[in-house]
Amino acid sequence: MLTQICTLKFRDGQMVHGLIEAESANGEYPIHYAGAVDRLPRRFETGDPADLRGLFRNLARELDAEFSEQTTGEYDRWAE
Image 1: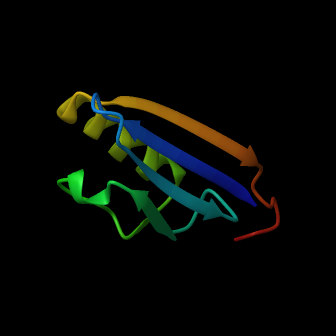
Image 2 (image 1 turned 90 degrees about the horizontal axis):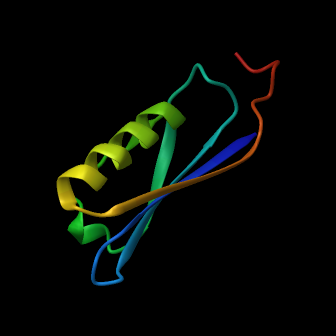
């Protein structure tokens, strides 16, 4: 399973994290948020790692925040 955490760090030090655990690249998975979630103007409830990365990169530009990403694991090649 691939686990991806995207983080936004705001100038005042507050952070918001988005986490997704995906079995394959071809699927929609729940996205879990933590931290200063109220600072996000929009969120996806489900998606894949590319969706999460795109959302957080766009929000970083929009909100003048620092983007970082951590990915561990790998897709299960047998998952459909």
